[in-house]
Image (tube, rainbow over all chains, first blue to last red; front, side, top):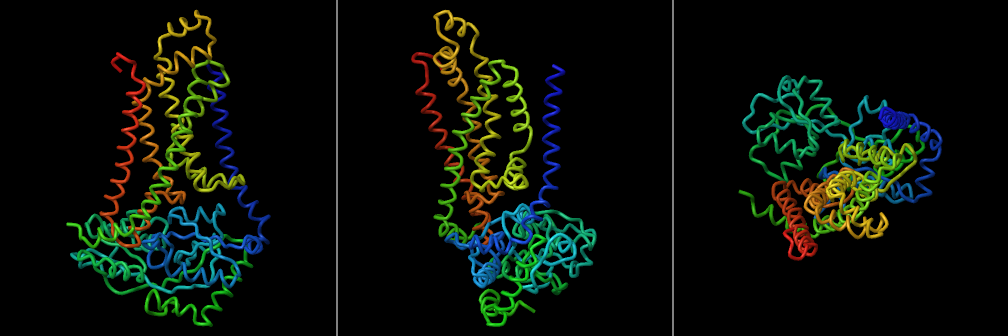
Length: 268
Length: 223
């Protein structure tokens, strides 16, 4: 009996050990592939793109089940200029960076805000959207007008989002959600007192879903710059994408796409 | 209460939801078949007390029953890539469901097998049948009949748990509904529709169970 228990224990120990080693192995894999990601993409003929598909008007599925949106259009144009096709991998936000880490895709196109914490671990393209933060509250709330008012209040955020950082810094009592839709539903239901999100997204939400229980609080603040996120170690891919972004800015393609989704130029 | 406009949106996307439902059915049926086979194999490994098989079976059941399906799926899909094992979403979900529910089903079968009186084995042996013949012709048919109600509980759970495959990007029913509802900003009608989809599928499974129980009923017997 003791022997058997020992056997089980050993197997468990080995499993834990193997899982522990796996993180070290990842870095090794990347080192050997370092020079070749752009070449791999050219060879494959596709660039794999991680995107939520649940974040309109940036990335979402239309009623026919086809992926659409601003980010989708932009990365499609970028891919065209790399002479490859964009292959989308619809991924939940909470699994987005782990998907990038585990090489499920080469790039994230999902309005990822560029911040210092993320720059430590990931590379970013030049920003392709400049937006701002906007507070959203229940219609009955009158005392949350700036981010400072978040202190001690119950604020909903998406796990791992830039908005989480902002609310945390302001000293909010944070509640985590899977996506912004769930957050806004709970603001309307008064389970939480407010939230903060991209001004472009909130505008789209309130336009498509006029909810009498919701209103924006105060003015837009904090310019947020969004870029495509890459694993570290493939500078030639980042460079190629940056070059493509510059091209679509110069030839007016970018402005056309921006006008189509927002009626304004969101690059500034 | 709920605006007609919202239901119109749901109705317009029914064909996309239908595609998702097909993926759910395909994934679940394959997972059910696989889990029943794995469950039976593991139950037998534990019944015939051969040390090494018994140990393997015990560790297997302990791990896959002892950890959440969601965690297993995340390990299969994201974790294994560090070992250069790149499973596509669908196979990863299928393997996860089979291994997870195979562990539960093995316990259902084991319980049913040990509930068959030892005298049945002895009677079969005394008629000159081999162990395999006794198992095949006498013990298994009785054990399977006993196990159907609890087995079906587990199979229904497979169908519903397949919704977790949405996390590893399988375009099944739940994922399709999440995509549609977030794009249209319509929630309650979509969630209600989603619930009805699953409910209808489970009702259909209930019919299969009734049919099977009737078919396997001992003529003149009570069960």
